[in-house]
Length: 100
Image (cartoon, rainbow, N blue to C red; front, side, top):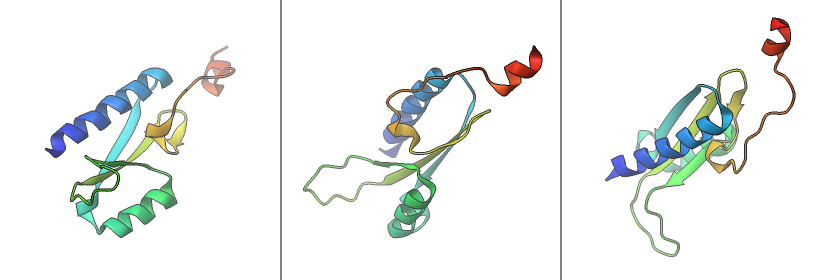
């Protein structure tokens, strides 16, 4: 069942990669690797996106929670990566300027 949620995260990361046009290093953490409270603190401290698999408001369910950290080549860490609605580049990169 959790494979479905991992695939959804991968799809959203691929969409982000298409918008950025660069290679991404992605780390997916599952709440069972540590206590859920520790994961939530890490998510807040590191500004990661959090995905509650199968969450239904008002229902207490025992579904996994995932945290996603993304680092983009040439850009660095992207805070709250799966919450990005729009990504665009402005100006010329330092690498392009050095090639001129």
